[in-house]
Image 1 (cartoon, one colour):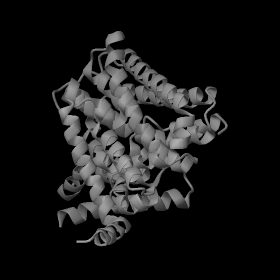
Image 2: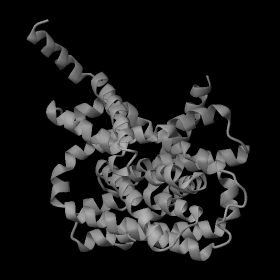
Image 3: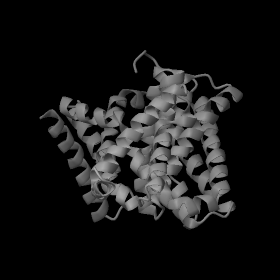
Image 4: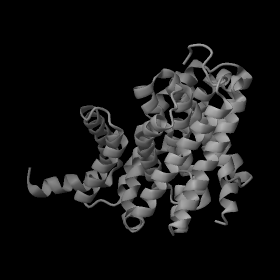
Length: 122
Length: 242
């Protein structure tokens, strides 16, 4: 039963998220709102039920597999990709490098001391 | 068994969701093996290899994407509940977030702004199509969230999925090099930066090559930046007039 309860909680949160996203025509995806709803729910409850943890962590463990079907969709965009390959390559490399550089420099400056882990937890 | 019999079996299989669901799982298994043989390099990430194998398979068998997706949609559907499940590690990290709220807020906002503004403006300057730009905008966010954002913005979700994966690979290659060049040695900062810029790929890299603390911070950054980006990206895109 644990998996059924866990899956029901996840799908229930996603369902609520989709309904809110559509009803208020928010630009935020339904599952993201569902994630926020679950986070608020867990904070109120004060712990993660074992059934939810089993299902949720199971899904997250195989998260990379779930990207594959959408990734295969690239097959539909060969034309666009070959037309804009250099734009895509330059944007990805420069923007990703800049993001890592700026984020690490900002953290280095803002949080020299605070950002050290105070205990050895993971 | 005659040739005609085999053909009938193929006609049946290629029209049922069974074949392409199984093909996706097998491709992922083979890709994981290949990645292990190659010493776990991010260049041959299992997801990238699995996608390449499946695209090859579809081209060889002359199957269109819609037919493939009939089977693969069962896996794809799970992205929704998996996104919701990201709340669990975020909840687990709540103490850490509370303790370092200031730096995390500043770092996350600056990082997201850099990721989105640099991607959109570089692509615009280079003359990319609007659809391409909108598909590039959420590239640093974990796939399930990025695809949802692209869909809402009018980008192409499956193109976004591919670009997100390539961003992850890029981050794992340039990240360590940037840290060496700028002398960033703190694993918490390395982890947070990798998770923010290169989502799950960055997190996996951190766990494998830097350590558990870096991995935990990377996972935290991935979850938080995904959540925040979903809210701040649409207004930023509006500033660009897209």
